[in-house]
Amino acid sequence: MRNQQSKLLIIGVLVVAGACGALVSSLTLAPIFPFFRGNSLGTLPGTVFHPAAFTHWPPEPESAPMSAVFNFTFVPWFRSVAPYIHKFRNQTFVVGVCGEAIAAGKLPHIAQDLALIQSMGVKIVLVHGFRPQVNEQLKAKGHAAKYSHGMRITDEVALDSAQEAAGQLRYEIEAAFSQGLPNTPMAGSTVRVISGNFITARPVGILDGVDFKHSGMVRKVDTGAIGRVLDFGAMVLLSPFGFSPTGEAFNLTMEEVATSVAIALQADKLIFITEIPGIRVKPLEAEGDNNPIDTELPLAAAEQLLATLAPGERPTDTAFYLQHCVKACKAGVERSHIIPFAIDGSLLLEIYVHDGIGTMVVDEKLENLREATADDVGGILQLIEPFEKDGTLVKRSRTEIERDADHYTIVEHDGVIFACAALYPYPEGKTGEMAALTVSPQSQSQGDGEKILKRIEQRARAAGLQSIFVLTTRTMHWFIKRGFVQVDPEWLPEARKRKYNWDRRSQVLVKKLA
Ligand SMILES: CC(C)(COP(=O)(O)OP(=O)(O)OC[C@H]1O[C@@H](n2cnc3c(N)ncnc32)[C@H](O)[C@@H]1OP(=O)(O)O)[C@@H](O)C(=O)NCCC(=O)NCCS
Image 1: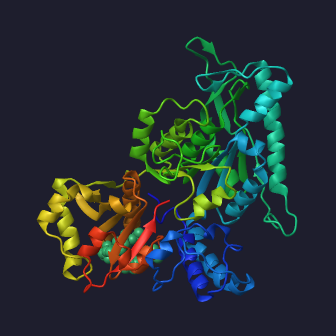
Image 2: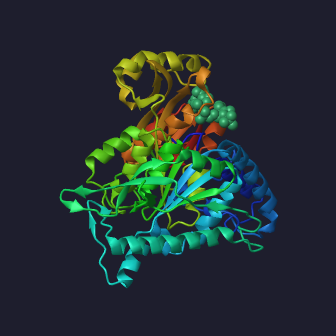
Image 3: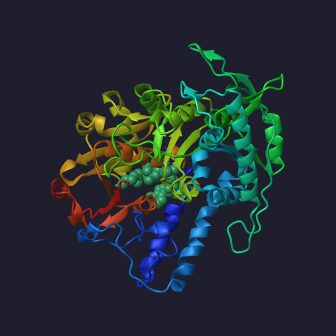
């Protein structure tokens, strides 16, 4: 789940920015925050959108000079990033960039973003791929690229080509990190890039009668040496090469090197910058408005999905990067990401924006987030009862909860339920109500509320819903910070409106699902 550990507060910033937009009502934010447009945020507590406003989401700010809004937007935005800068300081990220990204001319911006992230105290190991570059060298030599089992067969010519491609790419990457022209994002940056023989390799050998020659697999990662380079404040740059104790060079894959290094270092994140946008909610169906990128895949769900997919042999196969993310997560790397190089700034958007932009596979083994069963009814009642008594939640009977048990999602640890929420779909309005969101008082502020919200969002998406809504009397700000906007109760689907308690005067908040 995208919880407070990994996702940034820019969402909160945008709320503030939206607030400023409302205050300085004749301004346009788009020139300052191009990403502001299209984000389902941007309202002040107390700013109520009429249902009609929902035909355009979000409501369009009017236009005016940029300078008037700058202070109101920049300062809160920058301050709100601070907790995440503190959070990620001294963490280790292993970033694998596919060769296609470099071939597509994305290196300068990726280097700028990595330099920025590193300057905020993150230790970075960068692994580059070189598939297209090696193929280009092979073509120049009049030699065909040969693959089997999704791996390159590295004969003598291919090994030469790989060495030439790696040399050229290292040179280009070092050059990109050496930029520092005034008035560019790299001005004043001092990124030292250190490469080396950190990987010991072994040959792939002969598989099903196919001799892979100089193609290899990672045998060992020199974590001590990599750690010392990172502690020295440098960025580690690895090419997909490893050497055997006999001094023989082996051509590896970027994905395997990045995954092995992340596991060996027990990195905080493994991030693949790839030619695919991430994993879709319905992975086997075509992209479309009702098949967005699944921003967060729990490890168990990712494993299940992988089991249903054909082996990932080409980088565009759904299983290709996913298999490495799952492997890393299972081996202790809590979060692995697949993000697109096609979107400028995708690294920053994935790391510092609440919902991210690609897919994050996350290991949730520490506690059990799951759908409830009839056996959980007692625990749910025990959890929500105090909040019903103090009026935070509407009273629900045992019979009602027993009937609706499968609508509930819970966080359970050692048989105790610590958090819950229910999703009641209103398919006619393509929306659903998230009800009874509760986290036990002793485990509040640890991200469980957000985890449950994310799971409810996933369930809603899977049910084909386009938004979720909540009715709340006391928790409005919590929801606004997480992308909800207030609407008039008239907005509610007819069936829900009929049950709306006008005396309780609950506020209605809606979140559009990406
Ligand atoms: C609201 C609630 C579900 C949040 O769960 P949680 O696990 O504590 O939430 P998270 O850990 O994801 O987020 C914690 C943050 O939310 C803030 N928060 C908690 N309750 C809040 C509220 N009522 N209004 C605004 N912010 C709130 C915390 O201060 C904390 O902020 P910080 O990270 O800046 O310190 C939980 O506080 C709760 O169960 N409250 C009582 C029941 C309730 O109000 N349910 C909503 C019914 S509509």
